[in-house]
Length: 362
Image (cartoon, rainbow, N blue to C red; front, side, top):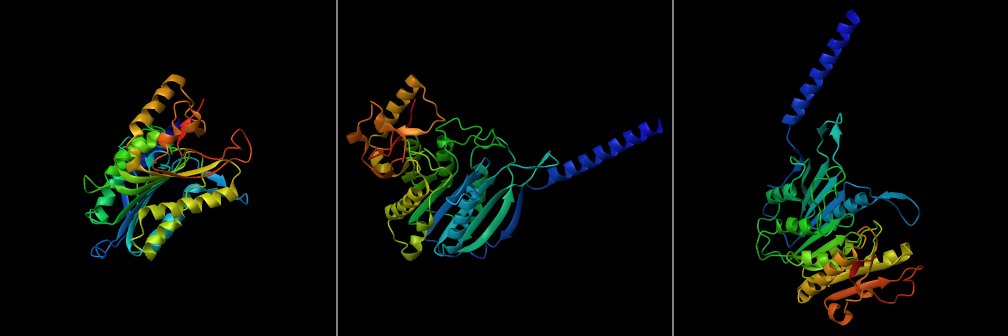
């Protein structure tokens, strides 16, 4: 009997301890600021701005050309941090969305990271968690951005957005975050989220770089037109190799470098590396969204009609849209610059060109 009473007392004490720590943790802020020097840098001149979103709430393991296991998101974070520390004329805002972890399996930790650089100096670093597990994509990050970034980007010569992650669905992107499946991450919500980072209604990003597989599609271009002038993406797979973004620092040598030159340098460098590293098809395309806007509604409507009729598998690799009967190459090639290398094997090993548009095939 005494043993039974003692056991109950121990269970009660354990419950009280866990409850106490639970209440304590619930009272803690969802944000922990590690570094904050933003007031000191408030008057520093900024000539350009870059935002990096790096997704890590999924499987990002890959093997490099030497067979070494790597985490793609960590490599992307390293590249972004390098740019932040060397961008002495601009500001760099980095979001590293990591898997939501919990203390004792119950209480959410501040797993995500945010870094803000201005003129090559780290001004703010913080960790945070989401207060709402189904909040609109990028809404918390937008609040942090408003606290530190240039108040008005209307006078900035150039503004860039870099997205690193897996392939984005066009819409209905719940489940993109493994540990927060109720957050909708898609081309549709990315476009809406990006718009929050623009302080002027008529302002757009000069370039959005989608370092993802298979997002060089008519639907994605249509989603990006309201928020960007150009898009750099792959209509095929990137295999978690990601884009090489070091050429972005060409702005340090010449802040007046035209945006297309920056995009071309990134695309060319990425293309040459991928040709050396992989044996599969490689395709990268720069989309002039202003020129594409003249025909994108027609092309996107044709793709949607095709998908409704044939219901292609959205999880399969893209095919070249030019392989589909409705595609008019002469009409839909305007506004695209494509780098292409065929696969070393398979049905498209003999392909000499790529339209630059990716579609889902049967």
